[in-house]
Amino acid sequence: MKQTVRRMAWCVAGALVAAADLGVVPARSADTFANWLNGADGYEHAVDRRRGTSDAVLLYFYTDWCPHCRRFDQQIAPSPEMAEYMHHAIAVRINPEKGTGEEALAKRYGVTGYPTLLILPPGTEQTQKVTAYRTSPAEFVEACETAGRKRQMKKSQSSATLVSPLSARPKAPVAAAAQQAKVPPPPVTHQAKNTVRLKNGNVIEGTVQLANDQELVLEVDGVGHLTLNRTEIVSVDGPLPGK
Image (cartoon, rainbow, N blue to C red):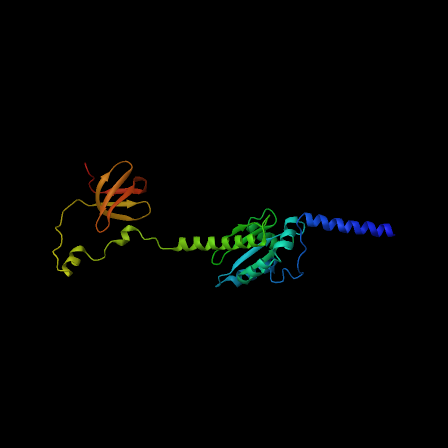
């Protein structure tokens, strides 16, 4: 009996040493995921909660048999860095083996391995993948925050209004502006005008100064010289130089 107890003690000690060698640290609390949402229902709640806020959503796809998932559960999830991150983020744990709704979410987001961690920034349905493999809690949180900022910056850049040079054309005619300033208008020169139609639907009026197989240089009133690539042009009406 005593020998059996000693053997059991040695086995437990050996297991603890092995766990320490592998860098596995026991979870700090059974309530590590108390503030996390779970499953397909939790995902729907997360999407509802983030509307009208600046909170990002962290999607954590895992399985019970995944060793790297256990490392995340024990080392990164209970860390102070993650606790701080959760103040301005919504986290959801999704196990695709727990139900059809969870399995459908995994297919929707293209999950093929575990753990898969995705950031869903506010105002967009696109995700950015982050990794927790061989990273510290601080590094993981930094990756999550960077992923959220990337998508927000892309969205703001894509929604910015692009102003073409033609939009800078003065709305008031040159002659009217000169009359208001009591300055004689410049002499009118009767040059042949051209109308250039582009593939993007724009129509530009001006005077062609140079035309060859590669490009076309157009003088546009109030704008100056515009150089257009021939591949962008559908048609050019009016006389061309040298023809």
